[in-house]
Length: 202
Image 1: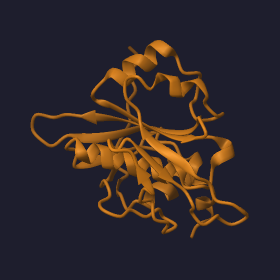
Image 2 (image 1 turned 180 degrees about the horizontal axis):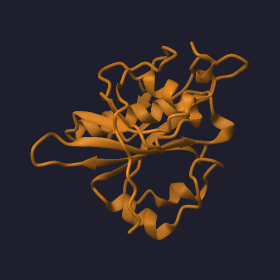
Image 3 (image 1 turned 90 degrees about the vertical axis):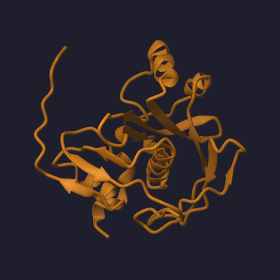
Image 4 (image 1 turned 180 degrees about the vertical axis):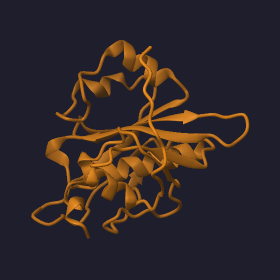
């Protein structure tokens, strides 16, 4: 396995290259082969407890955490966020708008009341083809990396979007972000190196 895989949770979906990710089906395994199937779930299926993964090299213990699909009313979960989960402080007004939008999705990794990771996406609906998921952001605490958190969150976001009718998911990252590229390639995506990015200031 490439050495870049040693720290996959620093991978972020920001950047300028498009790749298609087929949302995984049935039992899903991370690129290390660890099963990401939930140990337990609430009746609504919104919370999944994961843990007990074999520790990676140099780690003596594995970590247990919960993956939660965020919805309106979950604002209180953002009161205790670990460092590096988001790029900047969360603004309450923007958070309320995000959680109330049916096309915006976010899953969080929680451990003992602390948000240690988040993965966000947007569902794009079309009139001439099936809806697709754009993975907009992926971040985890610097203190909780190399524990499978990023893989678990992305897997849950794929599952959720599939339930809502999406047939494909896509994201982008920088050319030189080898850690991110190694991480995403573990999900067997179709890669497209022909896309040119344009940003318009409004």
